Image 1 (cartoon, rainbow, N blue to C red):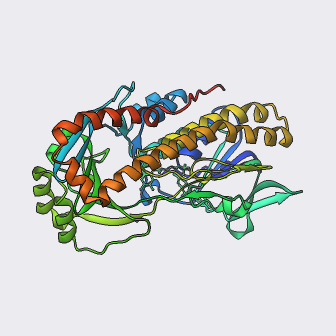
Image 2: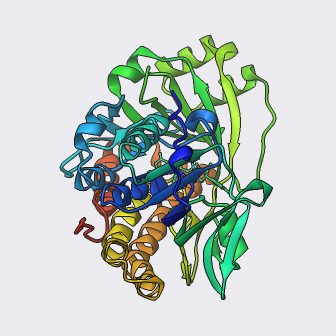
Length: 411
Ligand SMILES: Cc1cc2nc3c(=O)[nH]c(=O)nc-3n(C[C@H](O)[C@H](O)[C@H](O)COP(=O)(O)OP(=O)(O)OC[C@H]3O[C@@H](n4cnc5c(N)ncnc54)[C@H](O)[C@@H]3O)c2cc1C
């Protein structure tokens, strides 16, 4: 159920206007509102389920929600804790790694619409919070060279001491501010499919990576209901036209027999593809006076090993740590502007490490996808090589799961 607008209570001037109610904007809005700050959260869509949103929360993302005091909120949401990861090459299992892989919590799938709705609903309990769904911010408003608010349709203005752009990887506010982004080439795009639930997949509860002569994909049961989510890897910008029957055959050619039979038997029920382009990059500067970029707006994340939601939640914690004191003290716009570079400084190192690790994982998978000679060498050796490859892979996962640097909420 969409959370109703609370725009009637909107103050004439907010301490903070946040643009975009993804994981970064919704969690930061909640943190600031619960600390008594006047926050307006503007979101272009009315329903969170209208666009594709990732589901994977790594242990550090779950930890970030716990830091925010949201463990009970999370417990009330539909979710699926993964039991493990399983890698297949040319129809043979290379290795299987059981969760939680040395972390304190397992990687958990949570439907993002439910999470975002719960965050906004909780923020709405605070009188100082104003929720504006279905409003698209058109641009920035400047006064004496400083960002002083945002412009909505019909030339309406929301004025604020600080605007926080959490408007995602294609951030219009980043463009409006003229803040450049340095993009890294991503070796992959994703074609997204949904397939009917398969009992063994639901019971095994694994994130499966399948690579073979026909291509490469990942398959896992959705957080709710067990429907299978399937991401087919393609080169950047590559789009493939196939009938459902042809797609079923392509999936089946990579899968173990029991899954192949299911896919062939349900070819007509395959939904997709939805083309999801992957962007990776980071802004050299996340701020200008009166404006802060956060989450994907500052650093678009690839879907590899589910990092983006986690990084967005961790951004929100660090931003709250720096912003709450000057805002609560009414220290003025100069004091606010002074802390903005500190937020970037504290977050950028982890973002760069995570993006580098994601790119390394993606490049390795892509190499195996495109090099039949490597696959044919590795597949028959799976019983021997599998344990070694697994040990190396598990070791590399630790920071991608638990975070590269400590992040704690101090306010
Ligand atoms: C295929 C794919 C799968 C992924 N899977 C995962 C995963 O499983 N786990 C994971 O951790 N990460 C995943 N990611 C990455 C993750 O989705 C992002 O990193 C994360 O959503 C970033 O959060 P955000 O809050 O910064 O931005 P977003 O989640 O993109 O939210 C931005 C919000 O801003 C709103 N908005 C945009 N413009 C305006 C405007 N002008 N006015 C008002 N509102 C506006 C949008 O409607 C949107 O709600 C995936 C990415 C892709 C591409």
